[in-house]
Image 1 (cartoon, rainbow, N blue to C red):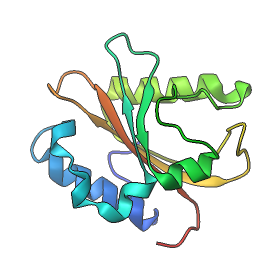
Image 2: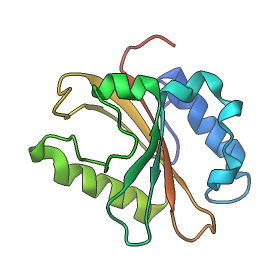
Image 3: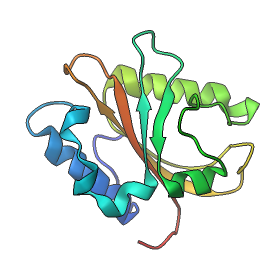
Image 4: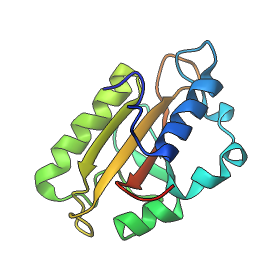
Length: 151
Protein backbone atom coordinates (compact mmCIF):
# COMPACT_ATOMS: atom_id res chain seq x y z
CA UNK A 1 0.00 0.00 0.00
CA UNK A 2 1.13 3.53 -0.70
CA UNK A 3 0.56 6.70 1.30
CA UNK A 4 0.98 8.39 -2.04
CA UNK A 5 1.25 7.28 -5.60
CA UNK A 6 4.52 6.98 -7.53
CA UNK A 7 5.62 10.09 -9.37
CA UNK A 8 5.74 8.15 -12.66
CA UNK A 9 2.12 6.95 -12.50
CA UNK A 10 -0.46 7.95 -15.09
CA UNK A 11 -1.28 11.67 -14.96
CA UNK A 12 -4.98 10.96 -14.35
CA UNK A 13 -4.15 8.71 -11.40
CA UNK A 14 -1.95 11.47 -9.95
CA UNK A 15 -4.70 14.06 -10.54
CA UNK A 16 -7.30 11.97 -8.68
CA UNK A 17 -4.94 11.31 -5.79
CA UNK A 18 -4.12 15.04 -5.46
CA UNK A 19 -7.84 15.90 -5.62
CA UNK A 20 -8.60 13.36 -2.85
CA UNK A 21 -5.76 14.83 -0.75
CA UNK A 22 -7.13 18.38 -1.16
CA UNK A 23 -10.70 17.28 -0.33
CA UNK A 24 -9.67 15.50 2.86
CA UNK A 25 -7.88 18.59 4.17
CA UNK A 26 -6.67 17.86 7.71
CA UNK A 27 -8.85 14.76 8.08
CA UNK A 28 -7.58 11.25 7.47
CA UNK A 29 -10.35 10.46 4.97
CA UNK A 30 -12.78 12.67 3.06
CA UNK A 31 -16.48 11.83 2.86
CA UNK A 32 -18.48 11.18 -0.29
CA UNK A 33 -20.09 14.61 0.13
CA UNK A 34 -16.61 16.17 -0.17
CA UNK A 35 -16.24 14.73 -3.67
CA UNK A 36 -17.89 16.68 -6.48
CA UNK A 37 -17.66 15.05 -9.92
CA UNK A 38 -17.94 18.48 -11.52
CA UNK A 39 -14.52 19.29 -10.03
CA UNK A 40 -12.85 16.57 -12.12
CA UNK A 41 -14.86 16.18 -15.35
CA UNK A 42 -11.92 14.88 -17.41
CA UNK A 43 -11.49 12.01 -14.93
CA UNK A 44 -15.13 10.87 -14.87
CA UNK A 45 -14.93 8.18 -17.56
CA UNK A 46 -12.19 6.41 -15.57
CA UNK A 47 -13.81 6.63 -12.12
CA UNK A 48 -15.82 4.15 -10.11
CA UNK A 49 -17.57 4.29 -6.76
CA UNK A 50 -18.07 1.23 -4.59
CA UNK A 51 -20.53 0.96 -1.70
CA UNK A 52 -19.16 -0.71 1.44
CA UNK A 53 -22.07 -2.08 3.51
CA UNK A 54 -21.96 -2.39 7.30
CA UNK A 55 -21.58 -6.16 7.00
CA UNK A 56 -18.58 -5.63 4.73
CA UNK A 57 -19.67 -7.79 1.80
CA UNK A 58 -20.71 -7.80 -0.92
CA UNK A 59 -19.09 -4.60 -2.09
CA UNK A 60 -21.11 -3.20 -4.97
CA UNK A 61 -20.26 -0.80 -7.76
CA UNK A 62 -22.50 2.22 -7.31
CA UNK A 63 -21.28 3.59 -10.62
CA UNK A 64 -18.54 3.06 -13.14
CA UNK A 65 -17.49 5.43 -15.89
CA UNK A 66 -17.66 4.66 -19.57
CA UNK A 67 -13.90 4.01 -19.88
CA UNK A 68 -14.12 1.55 -16.97
CA UNK A 69 -17.01 -0.29 -18.63
CA UNK A 70 -15.10 -0.39 -21.93
CA UNK A 71 -11.96 -1.73 -20.25
CA UNK A 72 -13.88 -4.42 -18.34
CA UNK A 73 -16.01 -5.23 -21.38
CA UNK A 74 -19.25 -4.78 -19.45
CA UNK A 75 -21.22 -2.35 -17.34
CA UNK A 76 -20.18 -2.72 -13.69
CA UNK A 77 -22.81 -0.50 -12.06
CA UNK A 78 -24.86 -2.62 -9.68
CA UNK A 79 -22.48 -5.60 -9.81
CA UNK A 80 -20.64 -7.07 -6.84
CA UNK A 81 -16.89 -6.43 -6.80
CA UNK A 82 -15.12 -9.52 -8.10
CA UNK A 83 -18.19 -10.90 -9.86
CA UNK A 84 -16.50 -10.90 -13.28
CA UNK A 85 -13.06 -11.85 -12.00
CA UNK A 86 -11.55 -15.15 -13.10
CA UNK A 87 -12.09 -17.72 -10.33
CA UNK A 88 -8.37 -18.16 -9.61
CA UNK A 89 -8.06 -14.44 -8.75
CA UNK A 90 -11.32 -13.79 -6.87
CA UNK A 91 -9.81 -14.37 -3.40
CA UNK A 92 -7.00 -11.93 -4.23
CA UNK A 93 -9.58 -9.26 -5.09
CA UNK A 94 -11.44 -9.80 -1.80
CA UNK A 95 -8.21 -9.67 0.22
CA UNK A 96 -7.16 -6.46 -1.55
CA UNK A 97 -10.41 -4.65 -0.88
CA UNK A 98 -10.64 -5.91 2.71
CA UNK A 99 -7.11 -4.57 3.34
CA UNK A 100 -7.98 -1.16 1.90
CA UNK A 101 -11.10 -0.94 4.07
CA UNK A 102 -9.28 -2.09 7.21
CA UNK A 103 -6.23 0.16 6.74
CA UNK A 104 -8.32 3.14 5.58
CA UNK A 105 -5.43 4.11 3.31
CA UNK A 106 -5.09 4.70 -0.43
CA UNK A 107 -4.06 1.76 -2.56
CA UNK A 108 -2.22 1.99 -5.88
CA UNK A 109 -0.94 -0.80 -8.05
CA UNK A 110 -0.05 -1.84 -11.57
CA UNK A 111 -1.46 -5.17 -12.59
CA UNK A 112 -3.02 -7.17 -15.36
CA UNK A 113 -6.79 -7.35 -15.46
CA UNK A 114 -8.02 -10.83 -14.58
CA UNK A 115 -11.60 -10.53 -15.78
CA UNK A 116 -13.49 -13.09 -17.83
CA UNK A 117 -13.99 -10.39 -20.44
CA UNK A 118 -10.40 -9.05 -20.33
CA UNK A 119 -7.44 -10.96 -18.93
CA UNK A 120 -4.78 -9.39 -21.12
CA UNK A 121 -4.71 -5.63 -20.43
CA UNK A 122 -2.13 -4.06 -18.12
CA UNK A 123 -3.65 -1.36 -15.95
CA UNK A 124 -2.96 1.13 -13.19
CA UNK A 125 -5.51 1.28 -10.39
CA UNK A 126 -6.01 3.70 -7.51
CA UNK A 127 -8.54 3.03 -4.77
CA UNK A 128 -9.28 5.71 -2.18
CA UNK A 129 -11.33 5.30 1.01
CA UNK A 130 -14.25 7.59 1.86
CA UNK A 131 -15.94 7.85 5.25
CA UNK A 132 -18.92 9.80 6.53
CA UNK A 133 -17.71 9.59 10.13
CA UNK A 134 -13.92 9.13 9.79
CA UNK A 135 -14.30 5.83 11.63
CA UNK A 136 -15.71 3.43 9.07
CA UNK A 137 -15.03 3.30 5.35
CA UNK A 138 -18.46 3.30 3.73
CA UNK A 139 -17.44 3.97 0.14
CA UNK A 140 -14.42 3.60 -2.12
CA UNK A 141 -13.53 5.98 -4.92
CA UNK A 142 -11.39 4.43 -7.60
CA UNK A 143 -9.85 4.86 -10.99
CA UNK A 144 -8.51 2.42 -13.50
CA UNK A 145 -6.57 3.32 -16.64
CA UNK A 146 -4.83 1.25 -19.27
CA UNK A 147 -1.06 1.38 -18.76
CA UNK A 148 0.58 3.47 -21.42
CA UNK A 149 -2.72 5.14 -22.37
CA UNK A 150 -2.30 8.78 -23.30
CA UNK A 151 -3.46 11.50 -20.98
